[in-house]
Length: 242
Ligand code: GLP
Image (cartoon, rainbow, N blue to C red):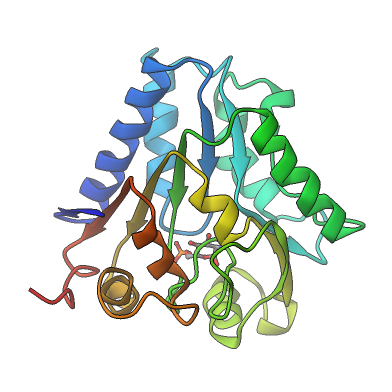
């Protein structure tokens, strides 16, 4: 596991965006794994900026997002479909048919299997972006998720619901379940970049890097992967044992 400590949020975002922009240039038909949340917002602005400056071409790029809420529609203003459309897809030349997000409507078990099969059919994810939850969840793999878990339905923990309630009018409106790529699906990516900023993530980052590899700390399973880079700001890095 490589750890890059960035000065601040801007520096973290630039370092991560530079890697993605470089990889897109190197491999025009790259398969990207993408994340949502507050942390990657500036990262997406920087990807859009590079596209507008003609440094990248997304016409052959394929994307797979990590997760989506169950119980709200795709077009809901706080769905991850809407997030991705607003922050990235509507601003670049990606082909609609190359955009993939987990389908949170209908038979979720079947949708999960179809999603994992589609990722495999496209040759697997070349580079996966991850954020991290305060309880060390990755995507929506909450503590207790198994290392080989596939894309499936999950129940969100109280702490995740509370953290995500900042976007909703009331905590009652936050979905309680989601469809998420599993840890097993994520670990199949060839390269993984995890970004984190702020003191709220410091404990999760410390536990990602040291201590037991365990279902209690979903992100600790990243230590079993051969190409993971954490790009974190100084605050998120502040509890790492020297
Ligand atoms: C949600 C998402 C995760 C994300 C996490 C942290 O739970 N499903 O993919 O990493 O939030 O979000 P933020 O970056 O807003 O702290």
